[in-house]
Every structure is written in C-alpha cells, then in structure tokens.
Length: 113
Length: 111
Image 1 (cartoon, rainbow over the protein chains, first blue to last red):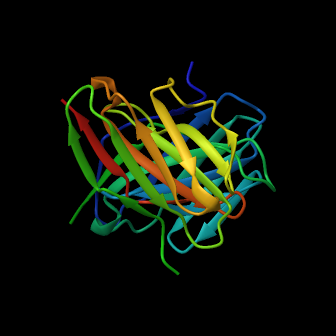
Image 2: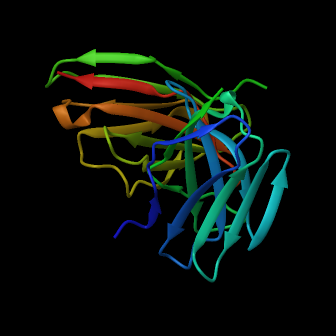
C-alpha cells in the first residue's frame, strides 16, 4: 500500500466549477500537509500548507485536513482555465524541522473555457 | 528573490555514460533535497542535505548515484554509469524549514 494515495484523474470541468481534489494517507505520524501545483514542463509550485485539522482558505483555494480519517482535500472555487495543471498533495512527518516529502501521484485537472 | 535553478534542463545520454546534474538553491536555504519522478510514478525522495552534510540519503537507489554539496551552496547529482531505468525528471528543492521550493527539474533520458 502506498503511503499517500491520490486519484490521478484526469479531471475535466467547465470554467466556474468547484473542483475537489483529494488524498488519503496511511501514516498517522504525518503532521504537515501541502498542495503543489505543477504546470507542464515546470517544477511543483507550493499552493498551500497546513499543520492542523480543519480548513485553511487562501483566495479561491481551500485546504482541508481530517487527521482522524487521514484525508486531505483541496477545493478550488470559480475554477479558471489557468488552473489547468497537475495538483500534487505532499505530506511530511515533522513540523518545525525539515524532512523529506511524500507525494501523491498527482491529479491532472483541465478547466474548459 | 531568485528561485531554485537546475542545470541542464534536458540531458540525453547513452546507457553506460555519466551525467552530472546541478542544483542552485535559494540563497540562505540550508536544506537542499533531490527528488526524482520516473515515468508514470509519483515524485520520490532521493536525499536531503543540511548545509554540506547528508542528513538523509535513504532514497538513493544504488551506488551509481553520488550527490555532493560543496560548501553548503550548490549541489551536484552524478549518475555513473547511467542505466535505462534512470530516465525521468530530477527535481531539486530547498527550504529554510518545512516549506520546500522546487526547481524546474532536469529531464534525463537514457538511451
């Protein structure tokens, strides 16, 4: 079993739709949760990070963590064609120090104009 | 602030040859990481430097891979001799603490 599972998609939505991207993880030691966005031929770009269960909002993006269910989500409101990219969840064990990231496989999102 | 830079952007080599990838982290970031994504798989951790020291090299696949970080600044990842299964995208990332910033990657193709 992979430590982080992510539905690879592809996911295609019309412009303006609400997008829900999800990951599950198996290791309860994971403490620090991130979402990266990766455009084609580019490196992953950090979108959001959070330590705790609950919601964290940044503009059109909301990250949600449920540690009891080992489930994390990223919601994109009013999706735009420019949001078309691969979205990667990434998780690490520690907070307060630097450690390796464990990635999901990525979900490829296309927002149609 | 300049981001993480990687060189070359692409490399095509034949099996058995040697390739050296370079990463320049964000200035002031003591932590430097190498990751790799092979075709159809998730991005996987290779190793982690803190300044010039290897903190964690548990992800290095075998002894054909050698990473160095001179003076705690830039890092190189050498593959010698390269095998077909080494093809993929090699990412470098740097951080002060948890938040890692990634470079654009080096696309390596071994023929």
